[in-house]
Length: 276
Image (tube, rainbow, N blue to C red; front, side, top):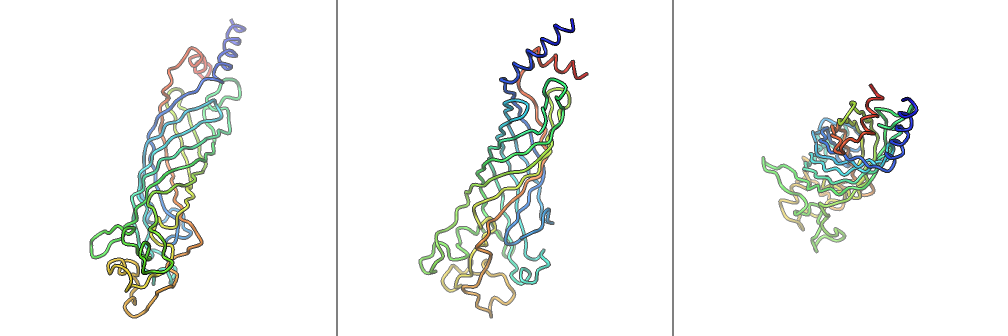
């Protein structure tokens, strides 16, 4: 019987190389922002919960493609910073962030594979592309205002030279990161991941240019653009409000619990019997 089992296992292994396995799962974790209001600190005090859903198609034991939707909050306050210039600037923002991502994954080991080198866990790396929507808001006198329509740096105003067009709240980014996968002996998988998002916008936080002349923009925009204590006596027109040479980033750390949708075949059963 052993030769028969060996041949069956080899046949299954060959068949599985061309057979994709689908998974669907829920992900939950935390999200934070890095930019003009939080230049360096990872996992700052304003790190917030995030979560979503994910679908993964495994081409084989090494390569997979994941589609994922995330929803969370990004926020930062100059008042949290030890830097005296940020404390004096006194800006803040909050945004709900929605992301749709397509990610390629590469497993380091022969994950859920047959044979002696098959593993029920593996490190992995991922990278891809994402669309995200971030609409920054700020609070003034207990009221929250959408900042993009106001043009706090003069965007969209013909009276402010060099201000340019309003920035878009719909953007694209490049997600990448690392993680660990674990299989619990059947249909259930667990993934841990750490991933950065490199964006192409400097306005997740609404801060990225220079102070506009407050006489040339909406009074509410002028008040939200300069929150410093001496704004009524110091004219900051043309001074840097943020670093225009950098782009904003955001990060997601999460745990995903997924369920293998593909119906198990006799080959799968043989694989799990070998694992017992």
